[in-house]
Length: 598
Image (cartoon, rainbow, N blue to C red; front, top):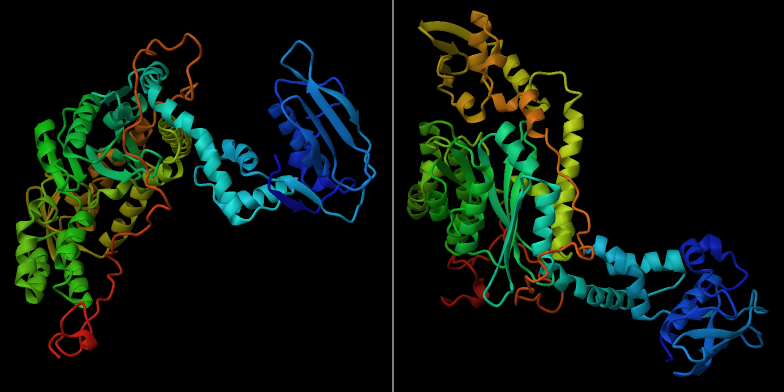
């Protein structure tokens, strides 16, 4: 049983209580003396190990078998020793003899400790549960500070892997607890929707949840605007998280629902949308901002009778960039992507056409790609959906950062971490909004004030009825009865533009009466009026508590591949990498040395 030893400077008599208080406080009494009993020799050896660390000395085994264990201090001539053997007629292990005196105080020989990977793994297991991204360097630093043991990087990394292995039982068991977990969510948060399905072999297929507070908050205070996106899970059994995120009145993220599925497929998105529809069930037309891929285009129209699908501009731009790669230089692609964004944000048809013509000047093929990609679904100049100038589906970036903190946890714990994060966000926003004294939420109040400042320099002319002509750097027509301005700013944002505000000030109207109700503090407070409640006993049901024990759910067959996860990112649209260009033939992807024309 000779195990790997690592040196530690602190020895008995040094101020180990000050240097490594955690070890001293937790383990100084794991060995109490003669007649102390243990359930097994393994338990005794572990207690001895911890005791030696807390008191700063090294030991070695004189005898170590299945009947008896004799241990003495490793320091030459020190009388400390301990003897334990089986208690007659029982299975218990008892300390029969112990000399508690050490004479090795201040010895020049450094103490050596058995810092086994398994031992370190057991120490860090609980922390790894809470912080799956616990790095080997941080593990080594914490073990050194708290227990005085120096680990190198590979020892810490292996200890982390062992701790993960020890936790795997809970990973598998977590899938089996999903039926119980669904029931607990519905019990603790009445009105919530929680559902799961398995495949024919009882392996996990998908799980959906929408908490009651999210359902009510979306219905009562949020714009009928939902962002659909996904993020891969780097957990033991992989999978993908699908999410439906709304925007509150201050443009903060508002998680409506999310699901864990075995893979991002057309079928799983369709199922997710069916569950989402049953949860939100509102009569208004919902505008979805989502990718056009993954069957979403078809599923959205099939599941939601009244909806408008706005294509995610980021996904479209990435596809355009990918399709152009290899045909055009870095500079040419950068110009086309910039013009594509300009076309999307252009509020008027003329500005859209100018940007599209710029693309046509570089490449007629790229121009045709843009025109055939359905501009009515992504360009402000054509769009019929109320997306309030939100152009991309990754609006819920904060929510996905919560996922990245928890995605290596067992599935039930990961879901509960997301529930907890959402619960905290709802509570803090509810408390914060109770202090607001303005009529609109802070960000919308600030935007309205900026437009009001600009409005003071504009000239207003009555055209006819409720229509006004407003002159500044341009001439715009405002129809206050239809909440319409030719600049399109009012329609796109839900807040009066500077031209409309100039009219209100001229005729004595209040601009606040012409703001979308979703931006009022009253609506914001309605959004967060309900609370998300804790779900106790996430890890395991109490005895006799689960009536669903007969339902078996096993992990999906997908497993995380061995080795470090690939960190390669998709090519950034902001910094498109410069391609190699031949100075001879001007072709892309090679230089003049490898040019075939030479």
